[in-house]
Length: 191
Image (cartoon, rainbow, N blue to C red; front, side, top):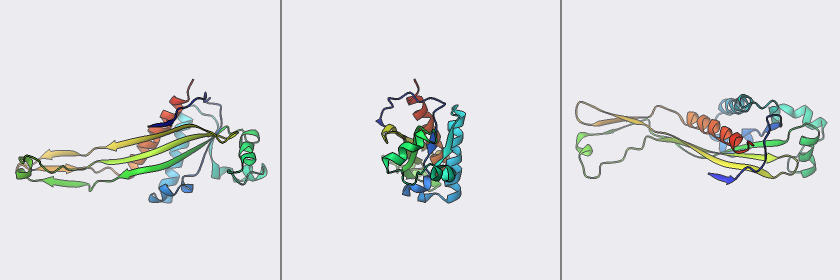
């Protein structure tokens, strides 16, 4: 789902500064290790897309303080990120809805032949919001929500029943949604 279509030409030489995932409460479902791994994945995806200047906001503590940047909500300080540090954009990621399955379910042979058999829900899903913010103006120039669904699978057994599984994790769904979201944003802002 696109909230704001990208109307800029994002260049691979533009600096992109990733806002820490821990700043968004939605990521409290993930451990610190998983958050750090996801941040590294985002930076790697941007680098794989050809971006030459990408960094995590927290990794630039010294540079930010040296430039007098302490508060991103202050328009003058935020504009210094572009003027002093040459990062044209901030990248914000938030986690929307997630859904996990039970991992395993079973329908017996009688349920399989009922008019309205019970529906097994083995799907794991995650939705991510990916927003690109111009540092000079604070304007959101690209805002998209990407959803990833990982379906389960079933197999009949000798008794005529059906076994259902999904051994994937919510963490995998989040990583997949993130990868898709970053690539979609880059494609959307390409000229």
